[in-house]
Image 1 (spheres, each protein chain N blue to C red):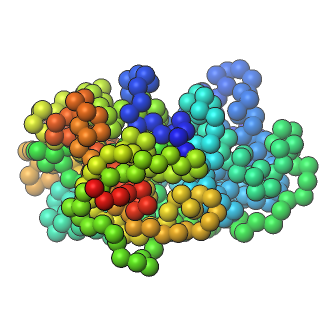
Image 2 (spheres, each protein chain N blue to C red):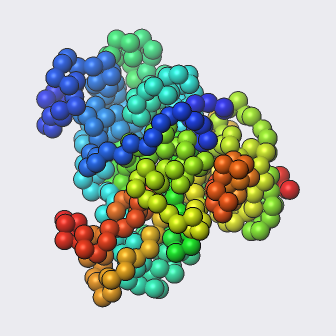
Image 3 (tube, chains in turn green, red):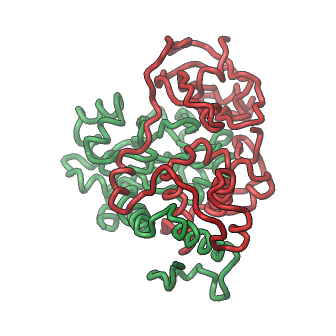
Length: 216
Length: 219
């Protein structure tokens, strides 16, 4: 049973022309795997919905904001990230073994996977294209400061840069520094300042005056 | 293997180009390729290390010119053919020509949340004590396995320091080739940037790499 008329039409699809060879191959492969009984078409829809709509960097932002608000949780997070993150409900595939690395005024952490695209799915969702692409994977380890400048992050030369190459099944999440002038803020308000890139280490949290625009 | 996947330290790929408001998927076929790869993986006919090896075994020129999900698709096709689940003829014609083979399991929609939440932890009970401890100086061995390995070229032959002992983890070099989990101690090794890159490395900077015991020797 071929899938007809996907319910979401995407403007990138075929760019207005006939279906590309890749699109045809994927369609044919999907229908063949279903016909053979190897995969369940309804499971595909659930998988897509899960990673397109439910699992994403707002999960990680909640982890970070909780650590900013609660010293006991932060200590737990730095000691046993897998358990501390699981306590907030984020577990599973590509986050089985978590490690959190803390930014300080003297240390900036940055995460890469030079060998493929390892990334902590339960807290950040699926990785952006740049994270999976050769420019970042080749240079993050050899020229992290140059890469950071391309993201608009200019570090003081005295700040030590620690790059974490995810070569095993350990998944790293950066705990960025809490922005100043956020005393007394709720976890929700703080979480709105936590960007995806600040948890990869290629960005910094938003300043508190950006909270209004970032809240949603 | 010294394939195109091992990108650390290479030059010439240009600047990193983040995409503002990037969507999770850029086309419908990417959604489908992602989902069929996960669902097919859930059959239990291969493991994650085998998937990685299938992708990195693409000829380097193909690996570097294909998009991410095109690489996934090529890896999936290779695994399906290698396991005899799909024939090359079927792939070419795009339809079923021979009877399906029995598979270990089929992921149902109802099971997806549980299966994803469980994941596939790889830490195992150690059968022997760790050879190294935090603070030990180690050298990444200068080896060039032709098969799957997670020892990146850019650290081979270089000296670093153990900063974390992660525990005993499934060893990809064995697991990718169907010779069992062969758990080995896994360490996070800190390499000074200048040890790896000479004067081009930042004076205070470092790269941390997770390396299994067989990749390391005392220094």
